[in-house]
Amino acid sequence: MRYLVTGGCGFIGSHLCTRLLDAGHEVVVIDDLSTGRFENIEAIHQHAGFRLIVGSVLEHDLMDGLVRDCEAVFHLASAVGVKLIMEQPVQTISTIFQGTDVVLKLAARYRKRVLLTSTSEVYGKSENVPFHEDGDRLEGPTSKHRWAYACAKALDEFLALAHWKQSRLPVIVVRLFNTVGPRQSAQYGMVIPNFVRRALANEPISVYGDGQQSRCFCHVADVVEALVALIECPAAHGKVVNVGSTEEITIRGLAERIRTLTKSESEIRTVPYASVFGEGFEDMQRRIPSLDRIGELIGWKPRKSLDDILADCIADVRASAT
Image 1: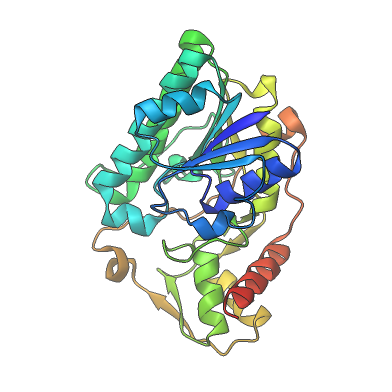
Image 2: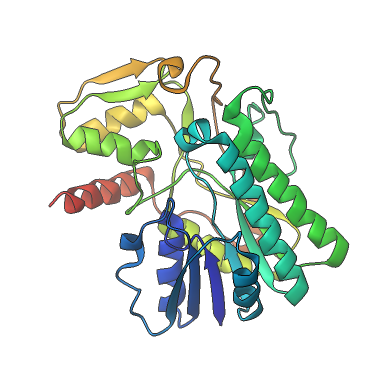
């Protein structure tokens, strides 16, 4: 098959491309390299089944041909990271929604399967954990830019499911929960690569707030397996599906575990949110997915533990420093 992967030079996209090529598929990537990096696909860019287009999903005429000539689309192109969202809210909102609108309209025109990656941020400040896909969402006011990403992604979901309802476009929405692993950049505030780099350098590790907020981290290899299986699952069409791990850890606990695993002498410091993101920043306290739906659809659950994830990330950062 020929797959189109938008944002294929990004962290998750590049791992997905490798997985598809290894399975014997053709892969076409479109990426404007704004947050993706050529280094992520350097090992596969000369593969006979791989093609890279440096461009934007907002370029309608370019996208028309790419969608027409593929058999299915993985739509991963998006603004990423809380830091980028806080610094560039206009770009965040417009890039996310307009890009998804282009992809879905063209997929509807040519009747192509689409897997849209969304985010656990959509659940907002809800305390009803674990989060179920059909559960209520609770987000902050529009005056808090923190929620711009969540709202833009939620609008993406509404649009995708509207296409399913109106024309039965075979679309799947995947809500990702803190995907991590080799090649993830610390540039946009991603917590594990940030902590690992500081620990290896024996620099202070900054934990925002009181550090008692908790997250569940899922290895990118497990996530990619879920994406590949879901796009081939007709029962998933028109559904929202959580993909993540249920192994919960506080951010303070994460910093301590990384410090131990790296044998680091780094000091762990708590830093007020306001000093990083400005006054009034809001965060969610816990973020845990229900995996019932994905289990029923494809029998998936993550195989790699948090310790496996951290070992891979530490090895990757060490290798990139040599």
